[in-house]
Image 1 (cartoon, rainbow, N blue to C red):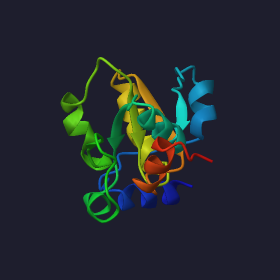
Image 2: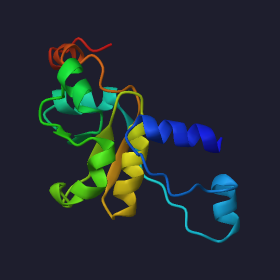
Image 3: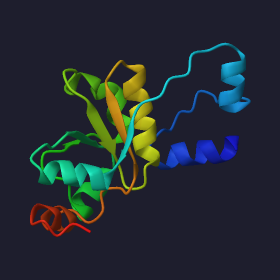
Length: 145
């Protein structure tokens, strides 16, 4: 599991892994450390909110090549997950930030970083940024499934 975690972190741009949590979350809890949670949502919900005129503060943490090749939801802020720690000052603290990527893995890391830094965060854990603008356009026209 440790090797897999390091491999995944290297793939998304974290080149210096300082350590890992032996025993996982259960060991953390058993040691008496605080555990918190934040809300999760789906990209479908984000699309519906945007179509209804309530676009959330959306943070896209995919890689720049993905923004170029696959597009970016209009109004979303783009910060690659590996750069997020150095760019926290660019994000609003007066509203919830919805974090998304393509599959949810990078967004989960970004949401954890934001939560630890005191941001009000919501994680898109299901249905990444695929199908925009087609999906949004269908919702805006009232053809949602």
